[in-house]
Image 1 (cartoon, helix red, strand yellow):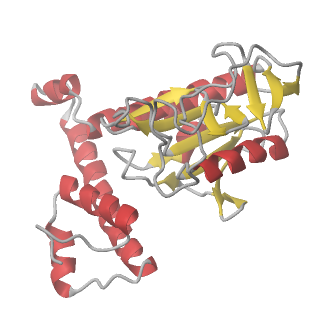
Image 2 (cartoon, rainbow, N blue to C red):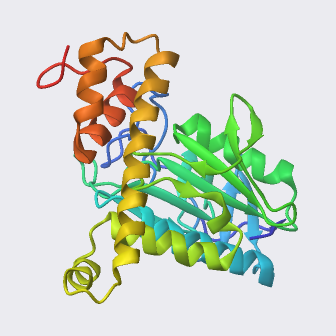
Image 3 (spheres, rainbow, N blue to C red):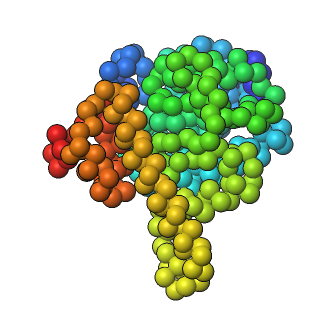
Amino acid sequence: MDRSSSPPAKMHAPGPASSSHAAVCPGREPHFPPVDERIVQPESRFEVMHGQVYEMMGSRQPHAIATGQLAYVLFALVRPEFQAAVDMLTRADRYSDVAPDACVFPKAPTLAGGRRLEHLVFEVLDSQSVANVTEKVRLLKKRGVRRLFILDINAATVSEWIQGSWNELSKVIEDPTCFVRPLGLKSLLEAADADREVALALLAKRTPVLMERIRKGEIRGEKRGEIKGEIKGEMKGLRATVASLCKVLDIELSLERRTLVENADETTLRALVDHIQTHRHWPGGDMTS
């Protein structure tokens, strides 16, 4: 949504660091308030950045449609342990309380029962300035959000905030931690591709009604072949992700480990990618140490 400066809305006083909710990101700055501790009154259409209150204006039609399409795809793609949301306030720091256009965050609460910080954040850019969106992104990155994206509907591009600048992406967003399959960027820009992306995501989730129709033959054989091809391609992508992570993190990919990756099922591959992304080393236990 477009943002304009405005007199303060009804605001809550910033809570102390020892609030009833535990801070979300261990190892991050200890003075961060919980992400679900508010400054502004929820549902008031206001945000706060660096102590400055902004009124969030209603979206123009292109922005509203793009945000709806983004949400449509995200809700289908997220893994069962995650949740997608739109316009949800997040406490970025002591003096900032902002609402990204869309996000993905873990369903499981903190030990104190509060909400966990987003893993992924998406901003839709229409008439709003890039500088304004970037400032919000900087706040959320400092807070600890893992990945941040901007969908520019005028330029028809999707970019990711990497090392302090926007980097345009070409085909997909791969995030096995949050998504059941890679997110095709065309699905965020074209309605027909959004439908296809959602359909493939529901198939990847083995949605019971679809699996039942396939079993009964209500989806023709050539479609079943297409589905198998998509799944095969997804497995290939997961194996490539493991190899890329090992190369970037200087993890030895021995013959034994390569054999394990080649023969692993989808669940094992996703767990392996998640472990390497999180811990920066090859897992022990059941996998070759």
